[in-house]
Length: 392
Image 1 (cartoon, rainbow, N blue to C red):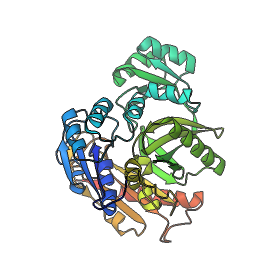
Image 2 (image 1 turned 180 degrees about the vertical axis):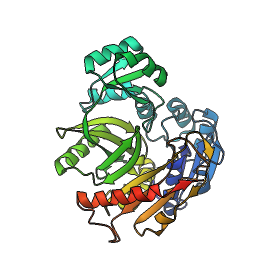
Image 3 (image 1 turned 90 degrees about the vertical axis):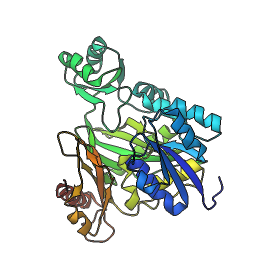
Image 4 (image 1 turned 135 degrees about the horizontal axis):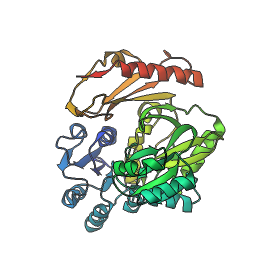
């Protein structure tokens, strides 16, 4: 696609914080964004051209979106690949990443089988349809194990460790459907690579260390605090994953670093990802601009690191949903190396991602973040800033 002004219009299924940040990245490129989302005045609405209100599987809404766009994409795995494929064909609107890729990613069993068949390393896994299957998987893989909902889970939701056979029924009831059992990896750390598939090339960002609690991503540290051999292997595996996926765009590839220094694929997101938010301040071309370039078939931007970076998420710290506003952000705004991203959500929910803070080492008021000790300092500062922030 040739670059022109106005450059193009992107239709995005989903208008959450990722859609919002896609919209923010689109402006300087002269790209317009229209989103479809079931929530009126969704987080993306203030920064995009328009919003179509419709569920993620609302084919009429997706068709309206396609009729207004040069290319369709999505920012959430709950998008309906069948509807997007039908609409794309009927309106002659390209869809990226390919709906077949979304179908593969939406079912974790299908995803793991595709990776294993492609010689990409993954934890040992078993299909689970009932409690007997789960108990058999435990005997095979060992207890405890990780139980994952095959469909509908993302950002750590739908995952549950299971301690032993007596917990099988309760665990499956909590998952609420078909599941996948994986061996529970005793990992050294979790890492992630944001990969990019363009029209004729593939690129990858530096390896990020991801820190989870209660299965939710809390912080990321880039470069990952591990040795170069592990970072090199993580990028190698990420490129192997990209070879198996169809369609242009950014892919979040979550990985385990084992105690022995090996790399296993945990999960894949066919979209920009929380573990890549640091790229806005930390790289030459952010994952969001990169996604726009990729789906449009434009030349990809640089993935070069500009500065070591740490990102910490602002999460809903409440017990039940309630309307909130951000408070106590003065410390973030006063910190020279910090950048605040507030997603504009009006309702907080337990552990819901409301925003994030990124710290970089480009202004010299932090320790030397080129080393692990310096990145430790950045991470500690980021946690202090998040702890000082509250919701009212």
